[in-house]
Length: 295
Ligand SMILES: [Zn+2]
Ligand SMILES: [Zn+2]
Image (tube, rainbow, N blue to C red):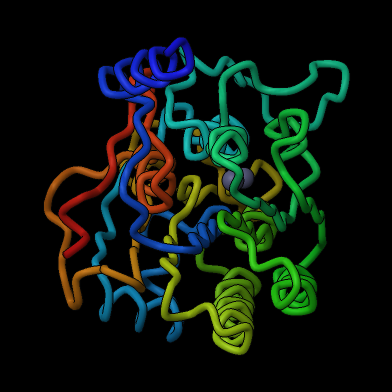
């Protein structure tokens, strides 16, 4: 009797809470972030794989990231579902003494539901987003090619429920050579080729039919001439060049050839990813699942 009452009480609590388990719509979610792949930077360059997924799936070129439109605060919002006022990661380099983010991440929320998680990233500062026991596999690589190769090596055995992948070099080449420089154009092409490697690996592992890919970016950038005459790609402001980011959903249950017209904010990536996996979206989230993108 006591056990029955406990069950009923628990059911009642779950029933009244935003933590109630949801429907699972995908077995695997792969979020791929192209650092500085916002604004018109990918849109204006050859990126055939990205653009094919954009055209075939549900997508918009004008989702918005946060202000300041910089890497670590923005990715923190993307992966925690809340704004900088809430997550307080307002720095942009790796500072080990500052520890880890103080709000739940999509990885910690997924782990709570017994799901498996992985991060393959191009910058060490993502360690600030790794709460204890929240990320089963964490790999920091250099180029997108190196990251994709490691992903391809591991995906067959990991088969993660939730996986985040980050490519750094569109940002690196932008800062060094400028927006739209030949070096950045090559970086876009290299990241696009790495996306193909990722997709082929997912297919080979037999996961494609049960997966959703979300392609996005942390920010764009604006062209700048430095004092010494060289070019660069600063970002951080609220102009479209800096805050516009692509947002593409592709895969299981995603509408085909669908232009998303509802506003999409970077917090929505977090909400959409866990909603797809049947993980309850906490009331504390600022983001909402982009339901219009799905059948
Ligand atoms: Zn960035
Ligand atoms: Zn940057």
